[in-house]
Length: 518
Image (cartoon, rainbow, N blue to C red):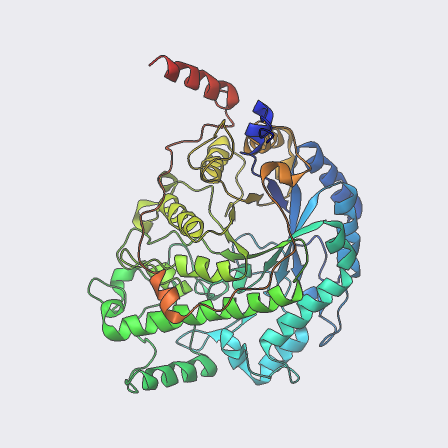
């Protein structure tokens, strides 16, 4: 019997490699469905390639592709863009963006959902998420219409499924060539699996608790039916949870010993969060059927709502649909649902530190990231992530590096904990300024565990086999079981791959040598 081949030092270090992607500009394809400035894009792609970046991520906007009318898809501008990405040897993560661009943090262009859908909303505004006083949110269709044939005979889920099928048909050459390695399925506002609970367009400002978004007639009726089945036909949706910019303690619902702790409050929060879970589950099931057999991963994005995390009520998370409390994990059920579809959990706010946040907002982004990533790993799924805000400084990069490998480098092979990939937000002129770009290039090298760019993902244990069919649906009991809190994995205090000159492999080796003599 032959001995297993001995791995070289570089091969062992490659097992610590975390690929890094860069998010392309929001308006790289214009609202008129044109790749307007291909020359600039090509120049930027060249720079990214020279920096050792593994690939790019791009929003593929429903509001652009199906703008002319139902099932009238035009992929030409995106095909041109994909070809440019392929020419420069970069990989591609494609986001199926079923939401409006504009109205969220960082949105510098406006791309509404298709006009023919907005027209239906003129005569039936209940197709949109609605708050208590009746304000509609046109960023994304309410999940209350997922299975209602209100769109020229199609349901919302059928619209999403048809769009995905058209993408597969029209991008089959890019799928077969291995360019597209990741399909992130948009499941809500900003592409995230959440309710639009904190819309800036309606006056929300950080750190407001946000508002529940279930007062369209469809979700209202569903709640009344669920309450009646539970033996409480008298229960209604909350009317005491405050307004967008309230603090938790100023509301009857979230205050200490508030409604959220009562039987009625718990019933509502369970229903509200379960509706969101079912919404994601159903659409990912459709995506799985469409991309079955393709060599790629599915992914879904979860929002990093870190404000009020340190309070007992977690108010901002609850209004967004994450039923997360000290004694209840609101994220592991999402991870468990994703595991059924072999999907990656993509999480935001990797760059944030508690010390950078205002104390009165009770933020704890570090503990939140730790909780969510640990939950994903405990459910045996891959986790990926991105920064929430544009940052060009070494402190932010070091925090991302820490989250990418929470227990550092393993010089003997793959570390126990390692993120599947990180996407940097976003490709803008400021990133490419010399000083900023030099720090970014160092960051890329540290993400790669001080190894050169590696074309072959198998060398860092990223095997992309054909997508398998989703596993059977989880029972309610199985998903409830995932709400039991479990201690997160321990995190190091700081990364051993710092982008500052004192960090990196040299300091790592020196510290190891010293430890031998202790």
